[in-house]
Structures are given as structure tokens and as C-alpha cells.
Image 1: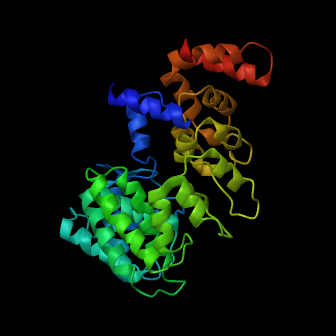
Image 2: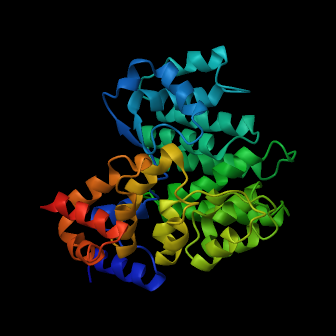
Length: 357
């Protein structure tokens, strides 16, 4: 049996969302969209200091997963010196250096993250980590993070200084998906987790113990670590494949707001589609083209329905049209079924069919 066949069997068994191509499946299995690919010749690389500031001030990040190469290098370097904000002179100086990042420098950058600590945003932490990963390689960064976590377990942190390190612990789980030495690195991280348990560290998501439990142990880790969390961010569920866990979380209005996550849809499967295509899910302003484009990789009739509904919606940009042009042969039969009638949706489906002519 081929690797592709084995992956297909795994997805069917676990209810995961199938993709249109093996390449798209491989991308999601590597943690997409929680990764960075580098783009050469991007216009933002003409003024990397300014683009670094823009990347920080844009809460979600302006580049989704494709970053300008020089801006990525500038951002990684700036992340090592930032203290209170990204308008500091030291940040601008660091961001002005856009040459290749060496492995030794990358280790120093990771070390600086651990020395600073603090409770910063998830998006800043992931952008810093994944830009550095793209620049010097997954295994080198993962080794440096593991070393940092080993040194941090025995320290006494105040509540307001542990959160960012816990995020690095959590995000290491995504690095494992892309590692060429995943088994070796997982063993090292498991050892750190066991040490954190022995040290009786807090089990919440803002601790090293909780971050590693979420990163390494999927559904079981989430049930343990998030059980008593009062204000629970959606991004802590990126390793959870059980749709029941997700749906229970979403039903609790006392928790934080949420946004559609393509990775969660990939892991948890079609049971997530009804809530992900609700009006609440689609109120995401400028991010709508991004998550629609990510969803467009999934081979499911529910995605066809979604793309039909998005035809003519201003916030969807050109994503629905691109989807139908790229997947015409696959979706034509479903479109014809939807177009059979005189409803508004049927009229949109007829318009989509014209794109395939």
C-alpha cells in the first residue's frame, strides 16, 4: 500500500477532511496554515523596517503564510530585541539587518525569547517562530526551543512572565509535524513534559506543562489542560481532532470569541462545517478571502455550497470564482444539482456553471 493510500485511510478513519490533491493534503499534514514560506522579490522587502512594524501591528499578520524573505529575516531579528513594543530604536536597528540568518544567530534569537518571557500574543509568537524556522530550518529551531524549555522547567516564574514561553512549548507541536527528526525531538520534548509534571508545574495553557501537553498529546492533552480554563482561546485547539471537543468548546458562550480555522476543519472533519459556514463564522472582514482560500482545498460538497453562497459577496473577493475555475471537473455535478430551481442559490450556481463553460 502506498503512503498516499495510508494517509487516505487515516483520514477516513478519523473523519478528517479530504483535499483535492495529494500536495494539498501534505501541506495540511505539515500544519498549514501555521507555517511560513518565503517569497523573493516582494515589494515589501524594499522597506523591511516598515514592513516589520506593519506585520506586528496587524493582529493576524498581513502575509498569512507567505512572507517576504527579507521581511522575515528582519522580523526574526527584531523579535530578539523587542521589549515593550516595536517602535523602539533597537527594534528598527535589528530589523535593518536583512541578510541570511546563521544557525548560531538563530540559537541566540531563540535564547532571547526565553530570557524575555512575558505574555505576548499568540500571533507574535507564531510569526517569530515560523519565520525563523523558514530561514534556518525546522530541526535547528526545534532543538533550540527544546533546550530553552529544558532550562526553563526548573525556574520559578510569575504568572505574567510564563505565557510567552508556554506558547513556544505549544507551538513546538507544529514544528514536529515538519521535522525530519520528529521521533528524536518528540522524545526530548516528552522528557521536558515529564519533568514539568514531576516539578508539579501548573497544568493550564499558560504554563510550560500545559503548552507541551497540548502540543504532544492531542485530544487527551486538551481535555486535561483546558478543563479549568476560564477564557479559552480557539488557537489552543490546533492539535485536536475530535469534533465533539471542538463543538463543546464552541457551545460555551463564556469562552472567548472564535474564528474559522482551516487546520481544525482538516483535523475534525465535516462535522465542523455547519458552524464554520454560519453567519457568525463568515463575519471576519478582511480575513475572509484567506480562510475561504484555505477551505477551497477541501474536497467536500459542503465547500461547494459555501462557495456558491459566497458568489457576489464583497468580502469574498475573487476566491469563489477561482475555486470554480480550478475545480470545475470535480464540482460540476454538484453545481448542476444546486442550479436546479429558481432560488437565489440556484441562480448563483448557474452563474458558477458559466465560469466552467
